[in-house]
Length: 199
Image (cartoon, rainbow, N blue to C red; front, side, top):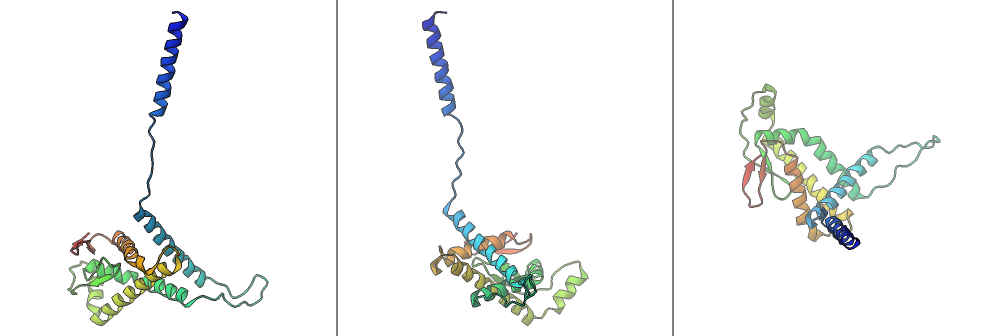
C-alpha cells in the first residue's frame, strides 16, 4: 500500500472514529416546573416536621448545668407544630375511616366525609370501633385534621419566599398528590374531574 492510500485510509478511519464519538447518546434530564414546585413544597413541608422535632426536643439545662429559657417560637411556628401533632394523633383513626369508606381524599388536599355505613370487616375489634364512634366524634376528627392541613398549607406559603397566597391552589395540588399516594388500597380519592374512585 502506498503512502497516499495509507493517508486516505488513516483519514477515513479518523473520520469514522470522530463521527462515532459525536453520535454518543446524551441523557438530558429536564426538571419540569411542576416537579420543581413539588420539590419546593415538599422541602418546606419537611422542614416544618424538623421544626416540630426541635420544638419538642429543647433542653432547659445547658451543658454547664445552668437553666436556660427555651428559644422563642412565633405563633405561626407553634400553630404548625400543633397541626403536625394533630395529624399524627389522628392518623390511626383517619386510616380506619378510609378503610371503612367513611372519608376520602379530595382535590383540595383535605378529607371529605361520606355517609357512615356499618363496615363489613371480619375483625371484631374494628366492628366495635365502628359501633362506638359517634357521628359527633367522627365529624370532630375530620374537622380537626382538615384544619391542621389548612394550617400546614398556609405555613408552606409563609415560610418559602418563592410562594405567595396566589400559589395556594398549586400547593393544594401537591398536597393532594401526596395524600393520594399515601392512601392505602381501598381508599377513596377524588379525580381532577371531580369523580371519586377507589384505589
